[in-house]
Length: 320
Image (cartoon, one colour):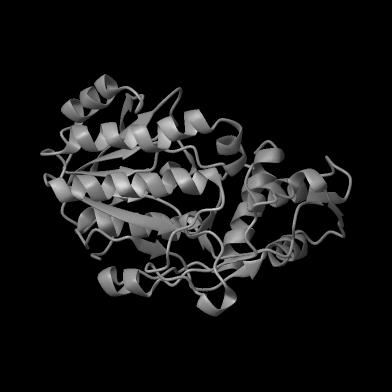
């Protein structure tokens, strides 16, 4: 990948750009000289240089208007309902957003955008025996939650549009992501916010947790957006590609590291409401296919990510 700001400028749509990943991806794309249109549903962040278009992907008319206005060379499709409990609570809404919305987007982009980067998830694999870890892309998909099911369906949609021609969809399967600005409905950010409030004297020294033994392949969101940008700038193939580190750590290790970074003595309390029966014991991916196709590698350590996440919440909770 060329140095920052050195790539050929293209017109890109980023769907779901108002979310956590979009907040990091948009500035990265702008620094590289691209023209960026971001979609949003209700409100968007104030990021200078982005053309914002309110878009409902469930409406084909809304999606057609978006593509006609932006005239994109490529699309990075982030928009989805990705919080597993939210998907379980309203599956119909999740399937409409995650599957039907993609059908509308690819229909509108056929013959217009050359490349569409479609963000799936490592959750499509489900539970894999320890002997077959790390997980490679050839592993059969067998999702264990409805979020994974919606993404498995979206991958089939992408394959269909790739077969009929007119555009080049590339499917990526990111594993667990973390970074500053992530909502506290996700485990790492939840821990960091609780610990920040303790450090600021706003909460008693007690953190509520779920299952600490499960292991995940965590990446910093800033590495993730670098991966997506590589694919938007040069067509590397249809995929799917795992976007991951090839290493997993326990949720307990994440918690211990955050507590150590805070410098406080903190009690850990297991909350049964935070334990999900569909949790997979260990999720670790094999990133070698993506590395061979693009040269991408993660650069930020878990410790650096956690330090930045904790600082984000210290600033936010401290009123900074």
